[in-house]
Length: 89
Image 1 (cartoon, rainbow, N blue to C red):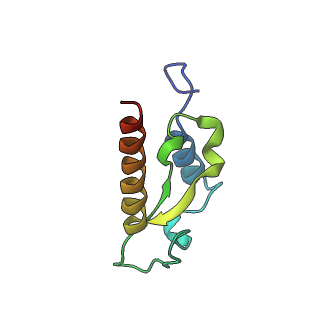
Image 2: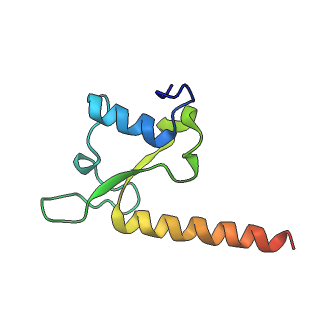
């Protein structure tokens, strides 16, 4: 639960797991999509919550991806949303 009494988001749960040490910092994990291994000065890695943002019970379904793959995933999600909205016309 958040301070306001509502449920926490997936992002908040992931951040809490990382800050408490239950989950590793994403830079210590290789990218799920391309296998990139982070080294100092290289592109960062993040936990991708994507479409799971409002589903706190799905926080364990997230993947660590590098920022290049994260951008690609976001573009694919945007295309999927646009395609779905065109089907409803």
